Length: 257
Image 1: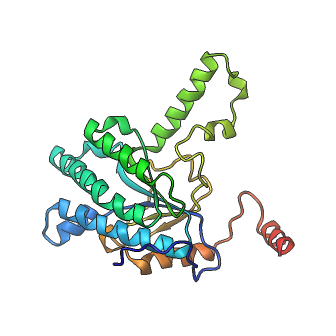
Image 2: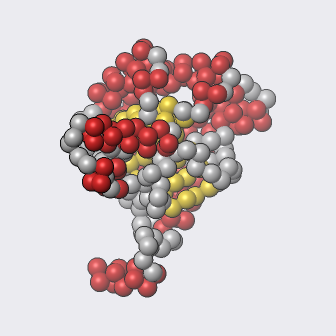
């Protein structure tokens, strides 16, 4: 793979999602099918991340959000969790230089305080290094859960009510959204899950309200340009109504033409 992530490329699809969110599932099963340790699958998954980031840049996607480690993943065997933390540390150190070179802005969302102090420092350094980049925004959800995201937003608003800054009756969806992790980015247009499972697993529960879903049996380490293009082609064929009728959508498109 080239070290260069093409920026602001064009897609063969007529409609390109601004924001793609992906659950990267299947690393462990990929390794087990090859009679390898599960950590080998996670290492292969890092290679898949590189490929997908490159394709996202080529296709003109603005934001790519990847679910790396959920708040529920702490329930996995301690040895696997420890190896995942080590891999996260190494990946941050190695990949952030490549991301910065290619004008990619890295952002980590989730309960970062739940990680070791050493890992927290590395996360902050990686984000600071790429903060001024203007290409693709790569969001990595780590120690993240959709319910946690909603709960922490509710706490922020509750504190403002306690402080007398706002009234409880003032709170609406817009105010709630302003407290969510991705409040300053476009909402996800396309959600992709690898590995054959057909659920969203506590990922971006608030933000996926009107997102288009795409599920594939391909395990994450096998993800490549063709798989992404299949998902983008499926997205391009869909009519997004956001509560309107199909006729209203068509009329609106004709008026915009």
